[in-house]
Image: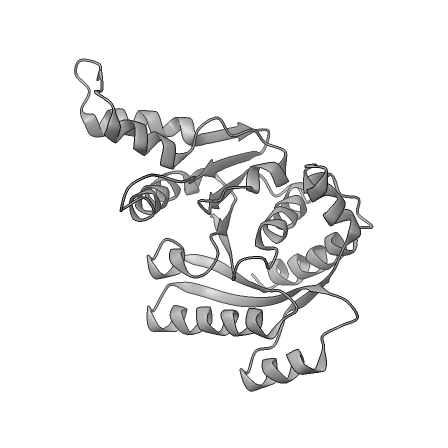
Length: 253
């Protein structure tokens, strides 16, 4: 049975880092195989995972729509597109990655979103876990590309705006009646606990964070040096916080 995790929140909250550390946790626990999904057009999950992406869904669709195709005899256009889309899966030992990337034209976001959803639906049963890193804001939620998920992890940075963005996403999930079994809120990039003003906003919005993740110099250094977060030591502050979060979430299954 596949367990699906989606990570969402406004831009700059550290969603990709959180998604990467979740994947690190699953790998170290031997909870394999994992399908990672970079559903952000500004794709950078691969770098955090130390994987090289040779093809994206957006690029494949753009090429497919813009070129005169030489389709092999006996193969339909749809079947040929499915064949090409297999190239958007970056494979590694126990961890595969699908990258949406950026398309072109007026429907550059909508159509790749639909295709990513289709690929996930077709492949998910082959994996123990699916971890999806969503684009900034609520695009994937509003287009129903993260429905049927077991755990929606909403990431806020240590700011009132970030907390309010999380509240908006929670409202949207309810309005769209998305099939989300559970929701958890993370306050990321904290210094010395949660500031009283942010705590007051959380109380007003009736949000109880499941975890806080402190600012971690080791994570910042990895980002600067373009090193994968999967290689962070167990003593990393962010690693410790995410590991504790995931222990709690998976024990609630």
